[in-house]
Each structure stands twice: as C-alpha cells, then as structure tokens.
Amino acid sequence: MSRYADATRSLRLDPDSQSGGYFRHAVYNHWDPYEDIPEELLERDRQALLEADFDEEDSDGLAQGLALFGAGEEAVTEDLAPLSMVLDSIDDQMFISSQIYEEAKHTQFFDRYWRDVLIPVSEERGWEPAMPTDDRYFMDEYVELFDAVEDSMHRLLEADTPENRVTAYCHYHLVVESVLAQTGYFGLTSAFQEETMDELIVDDAPEVPHLPGLVSGLSYIRSDEGRHVGFGMHKVQQHIAEDGVDPQVVRDTLQSLMPKVAAIVTYDDQFVNPVPLVTYARDKLSRRIEIITDADAEIPDVDELVSLDGSDELAAD
View 1 (cartoon, rainbow, N blue to C red):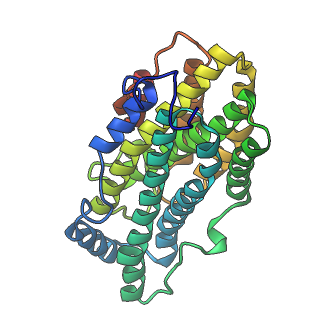
View 2: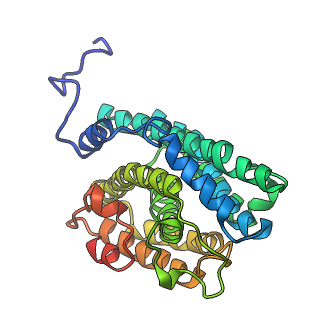
C-alpha cells in the first residue's frame, strides 16, 4: 500500500483531537514580533529606561533576566526537533511544527528588544552595552537544566519508549515551559507592568519603570505557551492512562529539576523578592503533578494555563 494511503482514517486530520484544537488555536491567535509590537511601544520603553533613576548595575539585572529568557527560547527552538521526528500522529506533528515556529518567534522578540531598547539605552547613557550571549548571565543550574532538556529529547532518537517520551515532556513542557517560564514571566510582568504587585517588589528596590513594550511582548509569548503546556500535560496524562507509565516517573523527574528552577528564578534580588517566586513555582509544580497523574482530571483551557494572577491563577488551575 502506498504510504500516502491510510486505511485507519478517511480524512487526513482529526480536528476534534486535543492537538488539532491546539493547532487551530495557534493559527487563529497568530502574532508577529514586529507588526504586533509597534515601534512607539518600544520608544516608550527606551524613554522610561533613560529617565529611570538607576545605575548601570541596576540595569544589568533586567539585562540578565532577558538574556536568560532569550537563550532559553533559542535552546528550545532547537531542542524540539527530535520530538517532531518520533511523533506518529499527524495532528501531533502539526502542533509541534507550530510550537517550533512559535519558539522561533519568541527568540526573535527578545533579539529585537536587545537591538531596539537595551543596547540603545546603554549607549545613550554612556555604559558599555551588555550583550545577551555574555557568559556571566548564565548560572551553572541554567546550563545544567537546558542540557538535561536536550539530552531527554535526543534520547527519543535512541529509544522511543512511552517512559522516555514522558521524561522528555516533563523536562520541556512541564518544567521549562510550565514552571520556569511561567514563574519568570510572573516576576517580570509583575515588576514592569503599569500596576506592579507591591508584594513582589523589594522595599529598597531602585525605581522600577513601566515597560509597556516588554509587557506586551511577554503577553503574546504567554498566550503561545499556554498551548505548549496544555499539549505536554495532555500527552503525559495520556501515556500514564494508556501506556501504563508509572506516575512516579513524573514526580521524580519534576522534583529532581525543581532545585535548578529555584536557583534560576532567584538570580537577582535587586527588584523582585525571590521568596514569592519560589513559592509560586513550587505551587505550580505541585498542581501540575496533581492534574497529569489523575486520568480523570481535566486539563485547564489555554486562558487558565497562561493566567499570571498570583492568587487566582493557582486556584484556576
């Protein structure tokens, strides 16, 4: 039989599948890192940073946070390729293709922010421009975490088993996307949006400017990552229910990586109090484990998965 024929299905796609729904959501909610983040928003960010009452060292804290995010988006853009090669459902493959595209867009947004905001501000203030690839920004735990993500994905090319798929989803979709990224976005958005969450800002913090361009870009990125997290949660839950993967694999993997997440999100205490961030990350991790190890639990919808409200978000999940 031709490889183009398939007796198991009459039409190519299953639009009612979880992956098919996430793919449609990606298409309908497409955004452009240039068209949808207007230049005037970035100009407001430049002016806010030029007028803010903080010095070069204070500015470096923001630079490090954005360097960590940008490098993470670049790394996961590369690391998803093995998963796309082993998936056998066209609906899953289409969703992963949309995810790789979206991770590339996120990389582009952070690159644009450095070129159009951070570097021009440094130059105008007479500071040595910081660069997003500077080795000093990346702590050992960060490197170890993303190396572990890469290893878990490449292991699929050597032994594509349900357990290895679950481990890969846990590393990528559940730790990096669901816990690390969401916690980091929670901290950055809460610090630099117009109405900051006072409990997250340290008492003696330098002036924290409102950065509407950055907050807008992070909001678009979060909308994408809600789909990514939902897909990973669904696939892990499916492998446990249908393939007999021991839920302890999930618990052990996620809990073993949590210390690295905690070390990363507490990288800087000049602006944001790290204690609520670590608590936020641990609570989110616990709730994710609770949902995906229960075959009857319903995966939250995308809007709930990307909510960053400190109190309601955890209850919504």
